[in-house]
Image 1 (cartoon, rainbow, N blue to C red):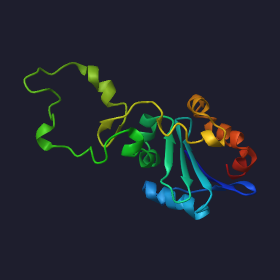
Image 2: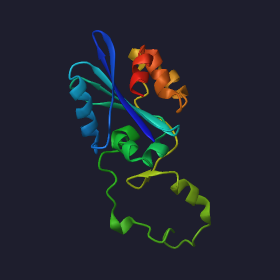
Image 3: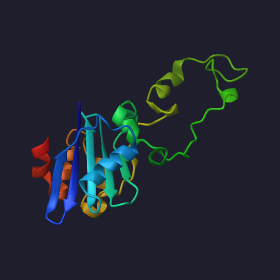
Image 4: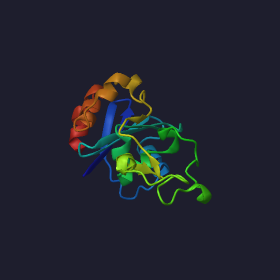
Length: 181
């Protein structure tokens, strides 16, 4: 089960709106959705999947969106999480996932090496985006909310189950977020 909400900072404080992500397929779609709420002010898209992971997308006017995801591997198994896990967020070179067919190891062994035990299977099952292993660690901009009152340390310490409420409380928008929850 997902929950997603938009928080827009206005002159009068924060304004919250519940949002459906059914028609969202790309990060560009998410950014457009945020800019529809406010094309000048700071807009935060807060998204969570039941105690598994949460993400924050911050859009400030026409600037590129900033993204933070609490657990990359959990998000990679989610259709909405995959949208957030861009090459930049994952720290990869853009377009680096194009496979050279000659370099593929189709039988699971190196050339000339015998098949090994299942030692590496657990690592491969951790999660993947475009075939690359993704760890169960936070990724993205850890300072995404620092100027709004949530430091890097506080962001990294958030529990997935209470993260969005804690963030909203720090912003002074807890009551507003609860109205759309």
